[in-house]
Image (cartoon, rainbow, N blue to C red; front, top):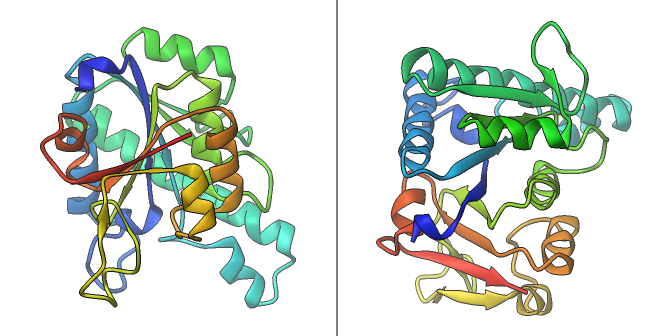
Length: 236
């Protein structure tokens, strides 16, 4: 199934970079697992873009609660994603030999390249994994929205949200033993049933641009693409 997609966009949460260890910000083992999965997908001949969150370091919404001006708090969150992107790049390129580029929506020339749509696509055409950092470059937009935006901009065939669960359920599976797994669902039903998949802006972007969304468990992305692991596909 992977060969059906020339180019994909994978969204990874910042929390996953911290692993399961309490008090950890960046966990070497967790980062290695993410990098290995991206390498394995890339090895199938698929062009891979990655959007990564920054929740393991700082969340804009949480920083606001502490008294920081909202716009600045969100900018702090965007900078946190740059740190995560660099950590993932190091694992991919320096340890696994996968050529990688970090493109940031906030210009930080000494650290990474600025995001330019055609440059990102050119890197992918040359076989490089592209990690998109700093969200959309604007406060008040989540990395879910950034993932949807970048997926649409680069012409990805599917937007993959890698999470802790193996797809979307009709109710919270952690709280309800009778929760039913949904193999496929429409964006309309996601909105009508108020399923907490992603924020509303991200859902709207995907729906309006007819971009398929796959929700699957992190560590099982390749298997889900091959039809060998549980996942949910959301279509327009």
